[in-house]
Image (cartoon, rainbow, N blue to C red; front, top):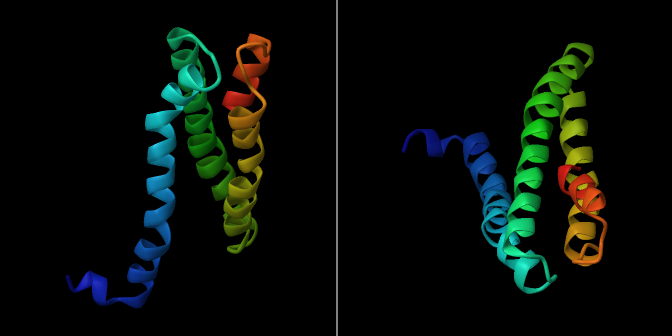
Length: 116
């Protein structure tokens, strides 16, 4: 409880919680959305979600960790720019996955967009 009285910690929790809920919802319902609304088979939707999760892992550990550390050594402000650019840049492949990918899209394109 004492930790929550620190303004910085409280701000981090208030700012971060809504974003975590959104990504949790995407991971839970993406499979159903692709199979029911975009016409994928359940197997193809599940495979797409697997590659989506693989892309998240690569982005978190390689870009977020490795690149963030390298940028931090250059300037302490640069990891924040990487995080912001990644959040904004991640909207494009997610929009493509929601709006442009369907059962008629070539499978390699579906995987490519999912990993991005």
